[in-house]
Length: 327
Image (cartoon, rainbow, N blue to C red; front, side):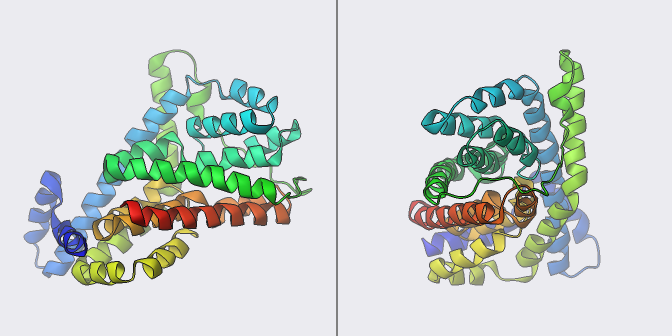
């Protein structure tokens, strides 16, 4: 397995037809070969991810315009116990929201009496299992990796919800709660398809405007590693110390903004080295992040947030280690 992964890492210089064109352009410059490789990776990955973001998010926002999320939330407000958890998870899958902007929805559900554990099940599912993450992973990592991710993400959602419920947290709202509001144009546009499509495209471009810097930083790091470090050596170290490597990338993923487009550059690099370690990183980055926790902490009591974060991170770490056996 190590030999195969090492060969895969070594083949990371194949950029495709478009990449070969960019590589040929940089080859005509007087730059050293390693710098040519760096700029080729940076240019190709940046354009690919930006194009993927606009395409996928336009599709997701367009589809969400046909889903009556208000009716779904109203239905959720009248369901308790197991049916409520299932509907919360389903609503999370359909939600196009990022984890930060889902907080106003949580506040609304809490205000009408939905249990905090059901609301946070909604948050976990919307972070890990939303349509954007699923479609984008298919494009970035392929169907095999995405299938394992779906199994792990569903397991994390179920396990973290159970652990959080057993902790009996205080679900009282923070008296200094955040009134953050996020507007999704595609969901409120008229019934004309072209009008919905235009609104969806505008929403996707708005998202790109908010997260382009995060994406560029991720591409810079992955391009630098690919161009200036030996992937063969990295692959050997990672696979000889897979448990330690998984723990390291798990900690690395926590502070990152939980957005599939932000983690895509590092994810592609890690998959080429070790798919299992790449899965641990993806679960960590997508499950929770410092920005989303900071928004949540302004809305819920500290103990509630701590219990939620601990439940999600423990579940994600265990699922990540189990994925090492599947990939």
